[in-house]
Length: 142
Image 1: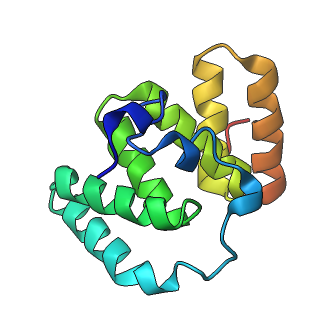
Image 2 (image 1 turned 180 degrees about the horizontal axis):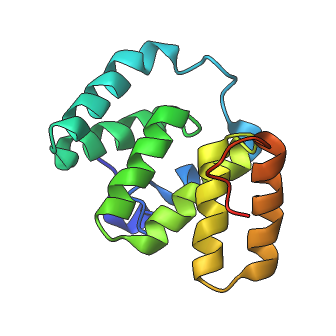
């Protein structure tokens, strides 16, 4: 694993160059992470079995190779959020929405998180996007 001095300050567990310092220009094309699907499936299964230590390890390995892989990114976000690591969860959710802006669950969750933190103007931007994505979804926040 990577030495701790290179880990991102947000607490995600990823190297900074694979997290908050990630250059979007170096993201692999869609489908590039397809060979990692069995690893991601195993991480999801481990999470279901409440083995978040191993699930986290697999997510970090996948995201080191494919930093935009949505399933590993969202699972690591859930692990961080459930573990009370708010700063890391927030950074991962923001990154997910930045990479996948048309994903309703993430956009909606980010809007809700921003509302609870009092960031009304920023929350409104994401809330409006959530309504645009899923105008008939009854769980939208407005």
